[in-house]
Length: 346
Image 1 (cartoon, rainbow, N blue to C red):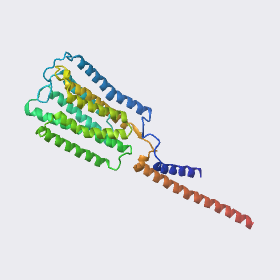
Image 2: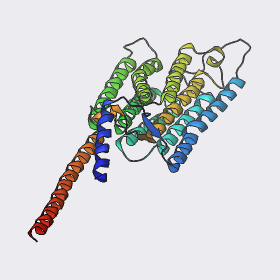
Image 3: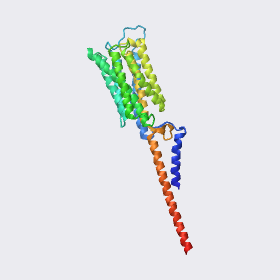
Image 4: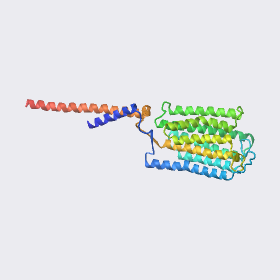
């Protein structure tokens, strides 16, 4: 009877959790000491160190600027080589940061494969971009490789949005769309964005610079990633990613005066520094998602297959326990009745 009452309370508690609003936090971070250490190592490798190196780059870039007020011609652009050390080294630094993020976030599951592939693709694109800046590749090949890098950046951005969605599904949220369908949906969106980017920029159908149109293509996946991150309770990393993105685009549009004509650290290097913060915020978001554990008391988990299966299992066990209790009671009553009849006959 004690076991039967325990199982009845378990079923009642699971049913009540579907009706009442959740009072527990959405997810629990770092459930064990090993998970906390892994999270700390990841934060050091893909968040703290990139931010530290980017601040060192920024300090060096500010130190070499000519603040006298005299400005010369721009020292960087798509149609002219950028020989500044700030742009060249920061491109390789961004490639190293993306590689470190891909290594630290690797593992099993569709979500981890998507984020590793996104960071790896962006790392390759940054390496190729670093080789294109000094003008080593001439003529038509330069334009083709440049457009390939722009398309790779867009695909990587949509890959990060897709992996955020897949992580949310692993935690029991947004489960109305199957994971395979979600991957196909984000793939179609990235393909449309790439085709639009190639048609409008490569063939000069819009009077915009290629990097401006590139950031416009980045806007939907960045907004999706930040929205899902906020819905899962990771608001700080999501907000920092959005602010870094807006700051990077603003710097590209305004092109501050000392950096624009600097022969050492121009506006491209400044943009790369802020983009490193943007990637660090995304890496922090994905580290938090990969170390989350779903809370069992969420009303949002009503559509979770795991919870529904657990309720059905408990109900089956409860019904079996009731049948066993009735059989034991019938056996006991039959034994007592037989004993009473024997006593009366005697």
